[in-house]
Image 1 (spheres, rainbow, N blue to C red):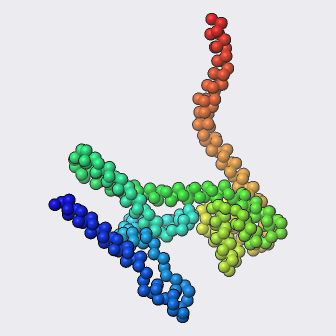
Image 2 (image 1 turned 45 degrees about the vertical axis):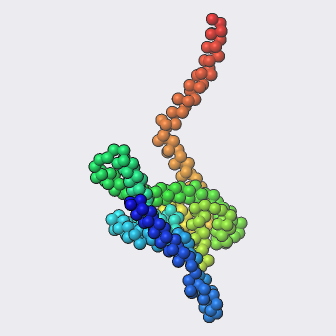
Image 3 (image 1 turned 180 degrees about the horizontal axis):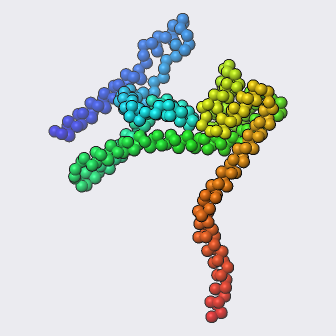
Length: 304
């Protein structure tokens, strides 16, 4: 009887899902009629494409949104999250990021629940500790997504710092060759690729939509989290406003960044001096001693 009830429930659920998917994928009346109405704009005529993932979003979307709102109320920090999303270069809103946090938490909860279920089958006991572990796993997943966002910010900023000297030198060469700052910026954006190039393409888009050059670079300086790029943007804005030589400014900034990278490398080497000796002492030195003494040892063995 239980098997029949479970089979009946499964069949009914599958039938409901299939019927709903068929109803969603069926063209709507307006999609069939509007293309033949001549007094509508083309943007109004184009029907929205139905994506199969919309079914899952329609079923679980409200619950996820409510859970995301609850996470937002508990954690807070919306300005910090919005700033980090911008610095990470992610095209996400704060609410979408909260939904991702809920999904990561549910993934942790599912892993802990599966482990608890298997453990309960093998060793039955009090389920309360397992429920606590599942709750902790959910919180850990939520916090892990936030930590992942911070890691993405650090990785992107490190990539920007690595790309900056080359981009600055290319801009300086283009300006020194006689191009205007905006034309030089467009040439560098077309010929390069990377995180800094993406930021500069946004600056170029702002300029082409009517923003003044100084204001566009000031916006870049205000939104970026890299001090080097902020100084670079301020330098270009001041050079454009006051008419100072832009090529000299870019060359100087690129040289400063390279010098700062060398200093950071020397400081890192001085902090990890003992760790740098580990391969020398435990790998290179024993091999050198072996190569030095092994022929003599073989000669002594053969002589005896």
